[in-house]
Picture 1 (tube, rainbow, N blue to C red):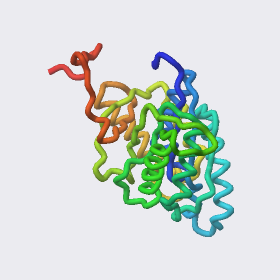
Picture 2: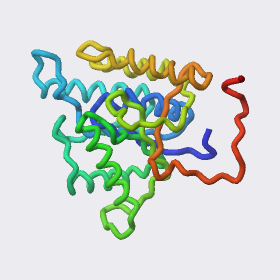
Picture 3: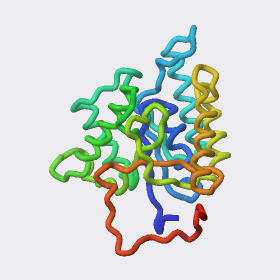
Length: 244
C-alpha cells in the first residue's frame, strides 16, 4: 500500500471504458481508503440498442455510470457533454482537460493508450496528454493553480492494443467481486447489446493473474519516456512467481 493516501483519476472516452479497464484498480484503491475519481469524455450514447433513441439511451448510460461508480467507491463521477463519436482534439477540449486536472489535482491518472482503432479513444489519449502538460505549467494562467501529475498509466483495452506494451502487473484479486458487481450495472457490459465486455475483461484479469501467480491482475503501460528508471540496486521479489 502507498505510504500516504493518493487521489487516482481515471479518464475514458465513453461510459464503460473506465469501468472495463480501470475499474479494478479504482476499486482496489478505494477499498484501501484512497480517493478515486472518474471522468467520461462522452456518454457513449451512439452505441444504443436497435430501436432506441440515442438521447434516451444517454440518460440510461448516465444512470449506469453513477451506479457503478458508487459500487466502485469513487468519490466523483463526471460525464462531459461531448457527443459520442465526435470528440475532437482542439484548444477547447485541451483547456477543459487542463482545468479538470487542476481542479481535481490527482496524483495518478489512468487513461487510454494511443494505439486504438477508435477515434474517441485516440483523441482522449491526446487530450489527456496535452491537457496534463498545460496543467503542470505555472505560466499557463487559468482559474486554478498549476498541478503536476505524479503518475500516468495507460490501461489495457482490447480496442487500444496497437503498440500496447504491458509494463506493470497489479494484483487486484481483493477488488474483483466488487468490480464485477459494478460492471453488471451496465446493460452494454453485461453483453446484452453487442460485445460481451464483462466476460472478456473478467477472463483477461484471470489470465493476467495467472502470469504473476495471483487470482486476478491487470496490466498498465508506462509512457515511453518513463520506462527508463534509475535504481541504486536491482529489485528482489519477496516471493518468486516462477521457479525453474
